[in-house]
Length: 301
Image (cartoon, rainbow, N blue to C red; front, side):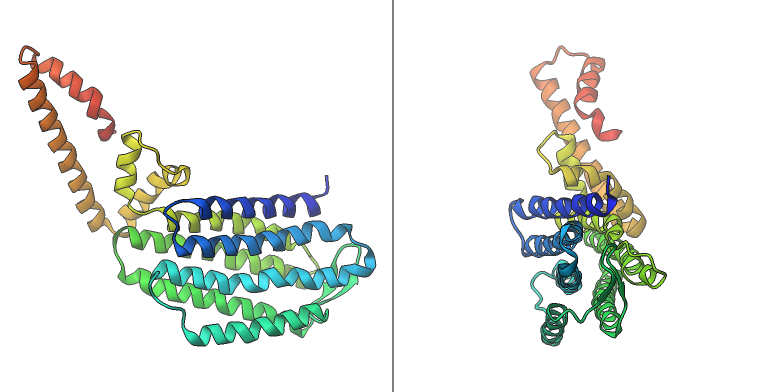
């Protein structure tokens, strides 16, 4: 089994189908489309790494340079995603669009002309890190830091579920930046060329970003789960962890919403008990208690 093929192939397919999964959900938001584009870019980056090893040696330098294209567009796409999660109605700053346009033109030209990197060992895709490559890494890190800074400022002043969603966005970015930078920049400086291993952080971060996109109200999702309603698998799986984060990040809002939830449950118990008393007056208190416990007991676990 060749890990240089199977790991990036698995990661590329995973990113593609995960992006499709989030994109297809209704009602569709603009952030779902951007999330799909981000995962499509990451998928292409991984899949090119998987298949380039099957190319003749004479084409491998071109394949290496083309590998950098998808990942070059990903950080700006991630920045746009973060901005839309922060405020879906707010436009993207004009200066960032201009910078991204000229940056993309330069990167495409450099990659197509095979000047981004030059192979010194075509068999193993070992290449020299020239000035263009150093500039590319700096360009990509710039968009990552800008995205993180933008969301951090907003998270510090927001409350409730939205604060937790922004925290998940930042947590994903905190995983991606050091892991990806290590595998695409620092380790190659030491002679270790395994960029596809950054997929470990990328896949986990994509899951966190998807939760941030889809998780609309932690207590409402919990209620729907307890009632047996149809809830997205991702929201169902993340519900408990999301509530724990809400309790830690905004304890006051957590207490308020928790108290409101308990009030609603208590009201439903009183209504149900009244209905049982009116309709079946012969039932003893113990029997009514058993009926109510069976129906509402799951809310107090």
